[in-house]
Image (cartoon, rainbow, N blue to C red; front, side):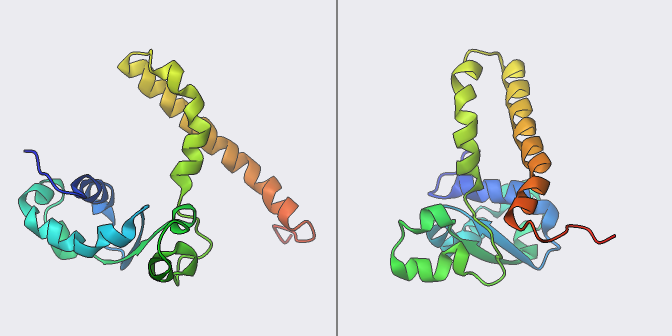
Length: 159
């Protein structure tokens, strides 16, 4: 069953990824054009309810409050009136979130593109998984040193 619509693939990604977290009271959704996507999100879910119920029965009825935000990197290209409402840096509760993590990751992962394009499906998936695991491991291993560099006079653990 093919459903057409401007944001249908984003809606499907949201439902597919978030159905496990329906018990949370609030979701933050970061998307380059969240200011446009969120406007009729629930109406689109209701319009295509049978399709989305196949992914998660009753998803629409259990939907928590959603704060839509535009990441810091993309917000500068939005109108000022939009930035005042959707810029992640101005939203209460978003903390020090950046919101454009995928763009930063893809810059690192673009170098394997030519290599994986020549691989079979299984090898391609394994190589991409390994690349992401390596990227995440390097971030985890380096966070202690980063925190120490950012505030060398502070101890991380009191003994």
